[in-house]
Image 1 (cartoon, helix red, strand yellow):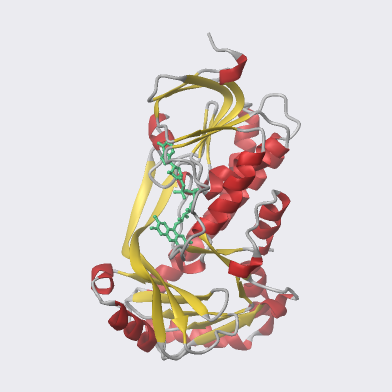
Image 2: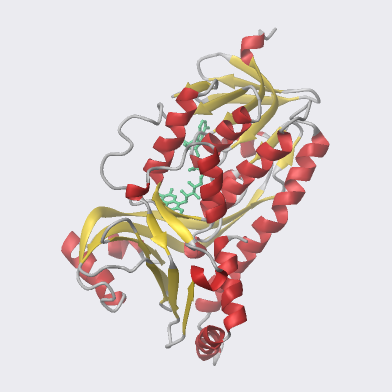
Length: 386
Ligand SMILES: Cc1cc2nc3c(=O)[nH]c(=O)nc-3n(C[C@H](O)[C@H](O)[C@H](O)COP(=O)(O)OP(=O)(O)OC[C@H]3O[C@@H](n4cnc5c(N)ncnc54)[C@H](O)[C@@H]3O)c2cc1C
């Protein structure tokens, strides 16, 4: 039998950005929450050094994190006031937050700093934090989900949330198949000091065989995301050659560069589970979807999953009610599918070499769009997440 101590409204598996933000939002909505994270507790020493993994956080998600008291201090936040996107044959589009009457298209925040801000808030809330343990079994019935940990403890909840990333254990346990489409590329990330100020401009180059993005960080620094089929060729470069290669590929737009964090690579895949809900279980964040990072929207989709789910569960007697879960799935499906399809189509458009005329067409398209103010305004509004 379960004691009340081991029984929750919601158990969340995975204390990354999405799971941690959901735990805070649900607790603030009056829910009894347990958060299970396989790694040791996340709040010690996270803010040391620079993190090569950065996110472009949309204004809507900044507001969400602020509402949780978990927006990291602005001293380490970069601002994207405008974007400058170049095609592989001279095409170009520039658009600015001011096109949509906004202050910023997005803010650039480091993964570790956001995690630290979230976990510091978790410590201050009445949340059961189970860190450094792993789940070994998950069973569901019409009334509850039951989770067994590797140390033998058992917990039950009306709802179990899988926020455990792209290789979700929860997704596997409940038998949800996911179609996984590898892009045949990895994202190589690294941070650089720049010789010239970035002017709060995010720069992106479609290179024909890859996509290079430079995101403005706080101060005179930028974060690179280079999506490439040959990550090893970049990872093997010494710091000086890497800096020179990145600077040259970006036409020295920010002058000479100096490496701050060594390059790391992560594989790019499009993951689509057959469903994001099952009896007493829901998936959020990368467990529910991944997208190509060319639009920098991966974690934004995850934060919106968390915000939507917390809002839906507020004031509901049974947080695991099937109709509620179905409603959540419906509400998120369209936003996620639109982002996945857009990123996928853009990726295909700029990696298609067989069709004669396509390289010209895609570059002409960018330049034409650049001259059409209403369409640009639309781009800016889309980037902001209106
Ligand atoms: C090396 C790397 C670099 C990246 N860089 C970028 C980038 O520059 N820009 C970008 O937009 N995206 C990047 N991504 C993708 C981005 O990290 C994800 O979109 C985002 O982190 C999703 O957040 P999440 O909370 O859903 O999942 P995750 O961040 O994956 O968090 C999942 C959490 O669940 C925990 N967990 C997993 N399994 C279990 C289990 N069985 N039991 C308990 N806990 C478990 C993990 O320890 C982790 O804390 C990168 C990914 C990687 C791997």
